Image (tube, rainbow, N blue to C red; front, side, top):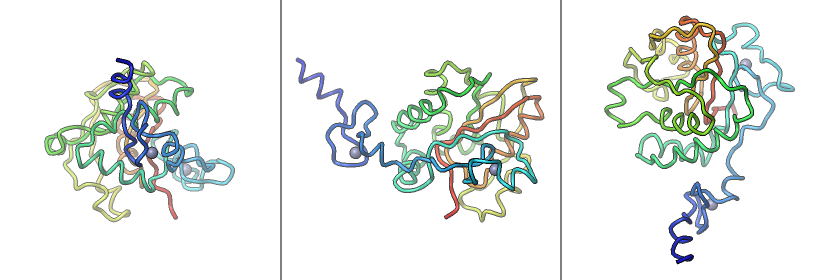
Length: 227
Ligand SMILES: [Zn+2]
Ligand SMILES: [Zn+2]
């Protein structure tokens, strides 16, 4: 009886050949080897900065969001994991990302609501799920934060950011979001999978500040860092 249960509770590691991937399906050594974003970084945009001070870019032209927390660097093997999660229906990965990101933000001040990056309805139909929403569901439940995936919508159908040159990404996102709720005085957290130029988060944060939010923080699974 006992061994039967331990067999179904033990999952193989999704990254290596270890038989015991534990509860998340990721063994301890693969978890440790993930590209954690630990370098001192700018508190506002999470790009590496000297001694963790505000970077020059955020000083001269501050983004609409006030803080960014990035769990990992967008490097191997996380890039492949996120691609699989986003484009190959590997929905079970939401548990891994939700658990790891949730754990890393559990000591931060609790926001009034958690808003996952909205997908355009056409994109949602094509993919079948919103990858940021699935991770946000897990964090909302674990940390008891109100999940809000209806106040904001993506009103502009745009080519995927990843398919565009970096310079074109800000204009691609201009006016992409609308926020229908009043968020007066609220502390809002935006959740996205990958932050590269930050153009999507910037456009969404702008819409959310326009709706009255007092503070906007970004929580992202991965940050693309300059090499
Ligand atoms: Zn492993
Ligand atoms: Zn910065």
